[in-house]
Length: 100
Image 1 (spheres, rainbow, N blue to C red):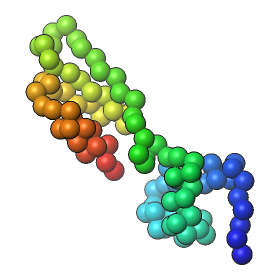
Image 2: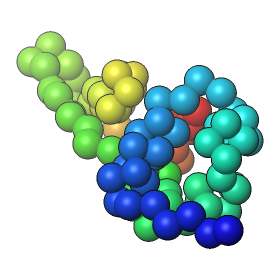
Image 3: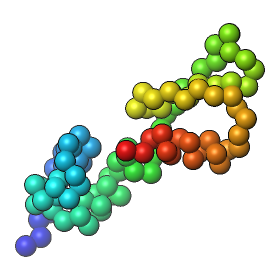
């Protein structure tokens, strides 16, 4: 039988998924849902872990050399470097740094 969940139930489920300490498969088993249902909810209602931009704060301090930067990711990680690589390399660096 198909269960129609309210948006509030879906939001609660997604919040639990974001804060999970078990694998995706175990989470789905515990909640009694299929992987495809969870994937649909994540695509439909969003998840900060999947395909979202992260707010970053770039700060320059007076003692830093010209062209240097500090990138602070939403998970608290900091990347400090001289800006001597291309946009594609920076995007790849951010993806790797934010990977779980």
